[in-house]
Length: 119
Image (cartoon, rainbow, N blue to C red; front, top):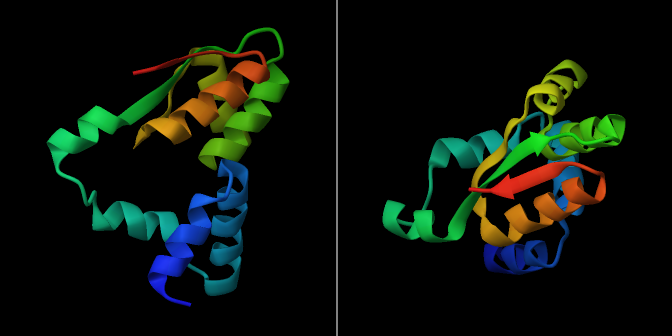
């Protein structure tokens, strides 16, 4: 299987499936693949990245805060205390991510009862 085949297979995965994959890679290889991706930096130019990348901003956790906290833990990988702090105070959930992924996260959080916007 080539790297290109792997990328094509990853495109068909949901956000939650990708998170599970990252967790499995952490366990199997003892490294965080997302840290490697962050260290490598963006491939696209800054001008291109600002056109397609979004930041998911939590405005309010809404009435079902527990569900939102659980979802924030899942999406961000934060611990319980950090996820609760984000739910209580609002703020950036994920920054500079592809618009499609940002829309998926926004939909998940809104389904859980949160008030979310994309920046």
